[in-house]
Image 1: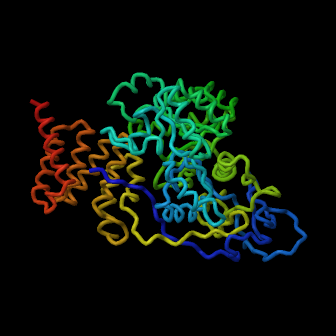
Image 2: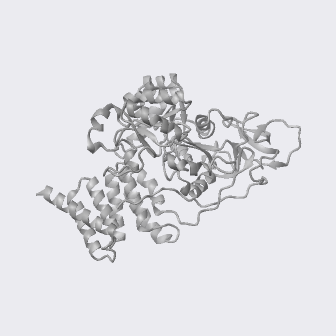
Image 3: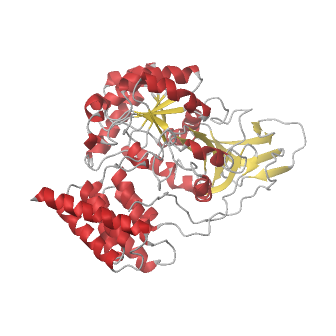
Length: 536
């Protein structure tokens, strides 16, 4: 049984009270002394005023307070150019705690339900929280990615034209475009997914979620967006997707492709001023194994040599853009100063090119972090934050939500590395050592399993569903989900066994006569009959 699962993380709040005075949302004139400020290459001792939310090297008026930074190292706040956080106001408290604690104060959300954005916007873009730019639902074909993330393969359409916009031809684009604009997106998101095989996959039900927008429609989408003064960000998977997106005139490409690009591809992206958002920590397939790092390294070297602008993003529900920076560092393409520029100034400029938040020049926004140590000498100091300022106002992490974080959050990182055995061992270890610190309820692994299914990882989903079945052997739900996992993995014999276990659980349930359970029972019997007949 499918259950809705929103992946968010609550981090422990280990914040040392900073030295600036708090004045609510009002930016009072302040003087910051005894700090070393990052100039793009090194840290330089400087003093700055914050007046009206902007930085000044000189100021003749009275200041509210002089803030001694005590030898701290000052950088711009961190930015994530691809995160699906802050897309649901119900998850705001968790998202705000995680991002503000980490010093990530600027976020670009490239796909979110348009119906949720009003509630989300009411809580972001304020002095003491995070600024977020929303795309709303991205444009794809009927049944194309990311439809499978929001809907089941059974023909559901609850999120159509909301969390995704299905556009199959020029007529549909003409009809739906006014609604896209009416939702007031900050930019437009489009999906290319193996665009070189689009015609074939769009006709094949087995390819549900494994294709995107018709590449022939992309130039028309870009033209409409640009007439509306909106930039276009394009999801890509293959080298052909990358090439098609660049040729169509998109402004950003999200994800390094999972295939080698050519020097010509990179040079054309540079000529057209396309920004590439990395997402190294997430956009990889277990099919590629360790070779994906070498491929990303080569592609990055080509992009850098051509002068393509880069920005850091994650597209990861558990890891942060700091993890993305560390992953980039491990590839050995950039020195630490360049990575620090990417994490702060270059990604900020990509997210908000019209705002003065990408440098420490006079007149720029008074938004910065004060670190306890020099990250160019010890990269881990990026996480040791003494003070957060945004437009001249001190920002502190909000209070942690009362509810416990899902145990699924602790398993995502090893799963993303393809280390399922490690993830399951981590579950057992945390259940034994920290039983009160996480939500270990049945629906936590169930939701994680369906997340893996929707991202094309049926074997991983089966491993999670099997674990859940051992933990909750009397549950109707876990065996219904396990059967779905086996079916997705093509194992009909085990699917039949799981449906039979589901019927056993239904037979002993006090809720057997309820309509939802009767519906599950009918489906289980229908599936058993169907696949038993097919196997004869």
